[in-house]
Length: 188
Image 1 (cartoon, rainbow, N blue to C red):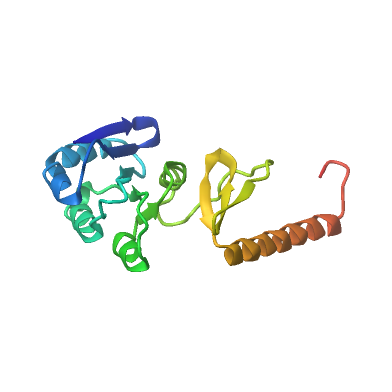
Image 2 (cartoon, one colour; image 1 turned 30 degrees about the horizontal axis):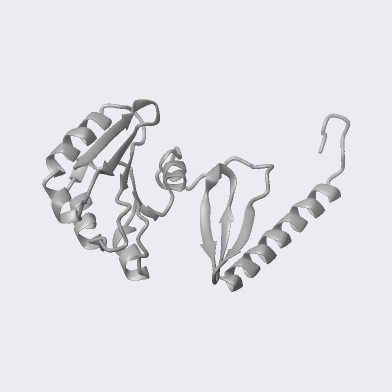
């Protein structure tokens, strides 16, 4: 069974599976999805749809079936489609799902942030944060929890390289700010 949640102020439709769900079963709900997307199209401006298919680890995601279902929507398709899944997808599966205006996320927060951006063709920047992220070792991975409870995992090598890149970028910004002449109306 699918649950639909329309947020007119965001021009966002969220589709969530309830109970055991596969893409093949979702095809039987395609007509209901079409009706909800038609309602979404009544709002002016870019539209977005999030399909939440977080699955049990024992239930593989049929990426090709999901991609074909989205492709059949034609003019009803939202400007942006985000798929939220907890499944470990291969690069080939992610490539199947990420055509044009479609992205795959493991976090609803990230999916909503991407879907809510104004332009479907140009990514926006997230709001600046003044709180550092939390990080800890968990087995063979580094867990990171950032602002807005955004969670992700990195290998130790990726964590070290990311830390280096963030440090280099922060130093670059601080040096540029320090090099700018201060006028009486500007505060840093």
